[in-house]
Image 1 (spheres, rainbow, N blue to C red):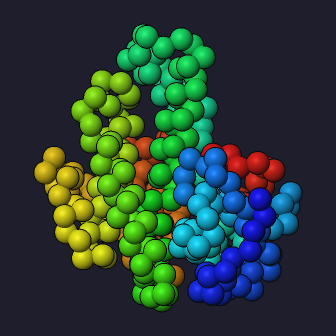
Image 2 (cartoon, rainbow, N blue to C red):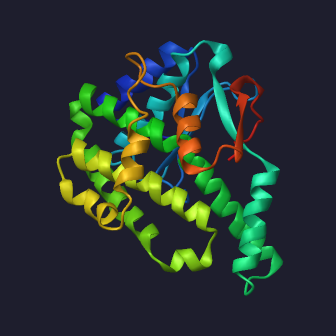
Length: 262
């Protein structure tokens, strides 16, 4: 459902994206989304940036602004440096192979479904988590009107992520994938705890030994110019720390397929 945005701060951020990129932003409400919001940058197949969001426009104002932040980061780069992360068949098959070993109870069709969910979810987390922390930092500093919505969303996300610390996941899913996700969740929790001045948000990860790797991931951020560390640099550095260097590749945005890869 195509909808307008009533929040004036978010509307101003959208206008900034449209001015910088030369492309319109289209907002689509999709209550079936598994995440709060997604963004698909304009390309030769799609003349506008598409932001889909799950909740009503009032409560989703921060999520929409957050997705716009990724577009702003992209369009501060020269065209040849605008890239997207895409998965690789070899990495996906490694996840499937390990899943077949761990989950002999799952039929082949379910193995493929779960593999896609796990692999695509991890690649999306790798692509967006680190860069998203820089987006959150910018929004918090430059758009104080969004802070109440931002605080609610970030705190809820941290609390939701704690479920990945469940020991049962180690018996059900590939260890490298589970540990990588936990490490990124730790970085997010540590960042949110400091940004929002809610130190209790970091405690679950500190108590199970994930603080060190979380801080190692955070050390990569805010190392660039005013716009922050380039997304590709963040992702590649995080992938090295997490053992995911050969799990993905980069492709120019202008060669994007009509549909999102992840």
